[in-house]
Amino acid sequence: MKTTREFESFFKDHYQRMYYVAVGLLHDDEAAKDVVSSAFEHVLSRFADLAPDRRSSYLYGVVRNKCADHFRRQAVHDHYAQQYLAQTANSQEPDYLEHQERVAAVYQAIEELPARNREILKACLFSHKKYAEVGAEHGITEDCVKKHVMKAMKAIRAKIVKNDAY
Image (cartoon, rainbow, N blue to C red):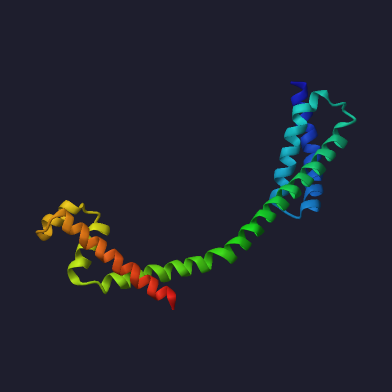
């Protein structure tokens, strides 16, 4: 109980000074509050073991070390953020644009298919219907549906390869 009152008094006497030390080092009010709170938590866990004349200097050292830890964590965070930005700027945008162009070309090739092949392909691929369902709707066999799909896919591949060659 005496230790609790001593710590409360110690906290009230030193919080503001340690806050200004942390702000001076970090130049960030919120980070300084976090660092000082963490430092006091650390000191509280060892408060009873510390000699009363050493507590202030110990707290100052803990605040200083926690500020250094904050800088290290921030440097690592900044490093990874820079790497991520460099990778995404260099690799994703051209891939995305190329992908969009390819998708547009596939849709265009589908629209250029003969009507029956286009209807059967869309029913199988876009509506996720089974060959038997599509065959029943169109009055043809499953094998015939399969042949229409294969013929349509072959035409689409040929169209895409032809466009890629140019």
